Image (cartoon, rainbow, N blue to C red; front, top):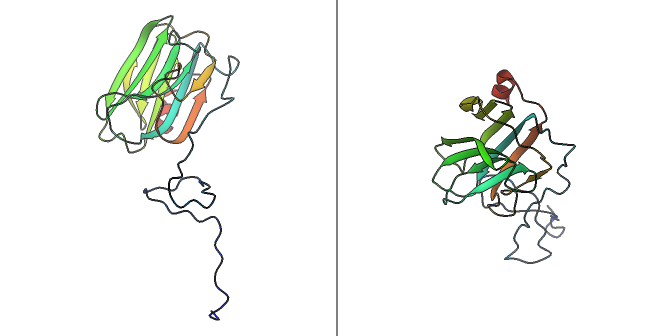
Length: 187
């Protein structure tokens, strides 16, 4: 206002995308600062996850539809006992799978119009009761199969360090009991 006082700004960040992201310190660098990969350390152990039943829910979107796998998993640290939600290596497809003692017991694929827009994906597992829910609608079921054993870790990959989940995550939830259809619809 007086021609000499000026204005002070601290912590401003310009966004190129259509949504806000967390603060990225540049330490005075004008170009070339990249966000570090997010991690989920301390995200559970064998006492956290129920081998008998549960639900893994993720409100996610892919960064690009580039035909690469992107997975979020709960496992025993191997691919022998595993629950995962993923974007498939085909264009615009959601895939879930449940593996028990190295055998696939539930494998469902759901086509979507655009994996770069957010979808709420819920994967329910219980002995002889498996279901895939997308945006409040049940889109896949199976009524036969065993549940995985020894579940002890949550990972933003296929459980062995590959197929990293490169995407946006609004919400990630784990329920240690199978939710009802009404509860899954409301997620």
